[in-house]
Amino acid sequence: MSEFSIYFYMKRKLEIAVLSDVHLGTHGCHAQELVRYLKSIDPGILVLNGDIIDIWQFNKKYFPKSHMLVINVLLKKALNGTKIYYLTGNHDDVLRKFSDFTTGSISLRNQLELHLNGEKHLFFHGDVFDASVMYSRWLAIIGGKGYDYLIRLNRFINRLRQHFGLTNLSFAHQVKARVKKAVKYIQDFETLAINYGADRGVDAVICGHIHQPSMRKVNVRGRTINYLNSGDWLENLTALEYYGNAWHLYRYDELDYEFLDQNQPIEELFEPEYQEMEKRMQTNIPERVIRRLMNLTDEL
Image (cartoon, rainbow, N blue to C red):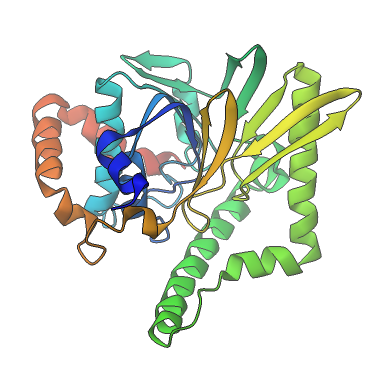
């Protein structure tokens, strides 16, 4: 058993963990891997930086147990003292009308500013810098569905490649690396986010949205801005972690969880917790609230 495996039971202590672009409710979401990661950490603050639930593509017929387990683990962390900030993104923008809402240890925000080690850190999803989202929303929705199909096809191809002993490929990465417009889009987004942070007088900006994990420092008008992006849980399976007065980029690695039976679905491994969650929801959540959540897509 590796040192990290022991941490799964001990839980790694983190000051802050940042996740974005999980896209629960889509076929491309790596919910099983995310459950493993979440159960291995104990953050004082957990920032969910947008697109956690994909309301654009939400379908009542597809929301598997592993996706519900992600929600269950998050709720348990909140009950156990973790402060959770849910920052809205474009795929969960319906929630923006409820921003600045707090219940218990969970707060819903559009942006978040934290002071860490004497420096100001600004957290936001980043879709405000995406013209396709701001001015052509339906085009962005269609693009999101196409992206989900691409991820599903990518998974199927990679299973075949694994069968023949070949390494995995990422179609989306290939497109982003080879298409000049895609490369420029990412560069423009990062530049806008960094300049926005400079205008706000912060020392660091922490974004999501473009599914490109990153950590780099940029000099803007005589001041240094730390640009951080937490990536996603569709392709990269990454998160940002803050401990020891420094940021670290975490990348999911199955070898870190080799002590678990990789062939056993996570929903079976944690079936008792799922049953407990179902009972709690049926007992404590009013039927009118459940109906409201299930009808959110009608507002799109």
